[in-house]
Picture (cartoon, rainbow, N blue to C red):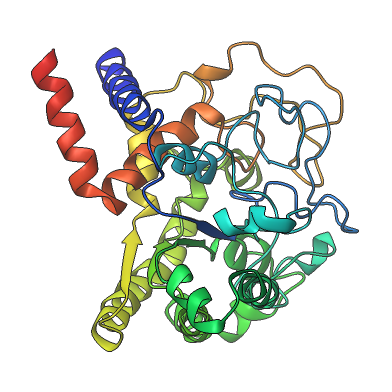
Length: 356
């Protein structure tokens, strides 16, 4: 079963990559908002514990350590490849000149929907600040293209992904010693608080010209090595209370996506079920799922600098105590792509099967 699942994913991604070679990207630009699952260097110069610009991070990435919280590519890196981009989307921290016309990555490790989320780790760029940075980018694009109308027409064609919410639980709601949120709100109430602010943030993104927006739900937070180490599983595979309490966010997010599609008919909002992506990873039956590939610092759950990681990295679902390995990201990216571009994905899949 394991070999069959892995073979399927490898065949699908190979077919997608082959069909993208020498072609134009599916969209002219890709703007990325998120946390450490998507950060590609924005935290490098910030005074924070949440940074990954040192070895062994990037051991399987062509440029080495870049600030990606992974041994190789992140989900958004792989999505960019699948959409046909020749290069990865640059971080806002270093993006300059005309390269911003192909998109910018604003993601920041530790960031959340709520401004206070993640503050115990130090500086981070919360969703509101990421939107402020995007406004700077939009202004630059207006200058480059010569008018607001030209910039708007261009931005309307771009692709936007937003992956926020994980830290609002991991680095807020599930830390009662530092945050009062779990004492003030039930899980249902907290999800509504998050979605209320998130809906305003997505509306702001819409007002900046976004018309194709993908919103990632919260994943299976109770299945990370950190959660298992801290709480134990009481005989279950994962820490069930974490998965249960954070699941209310996904219920509210699905409803928000439906409302946005109704209220803004000139735009398309797509919900990507991060729990389903995690289930795809579980179905691949990685040999090691409860610990990461690298030795981690107890305080942060991040890799200890300059330590030698495991050699069989493709057999690990996690790279450190929080973040998936590149092998797991590949599976998740394929699942996300199939939701975002279903006609492209299934046409290619059928063609591949026919050839076999």
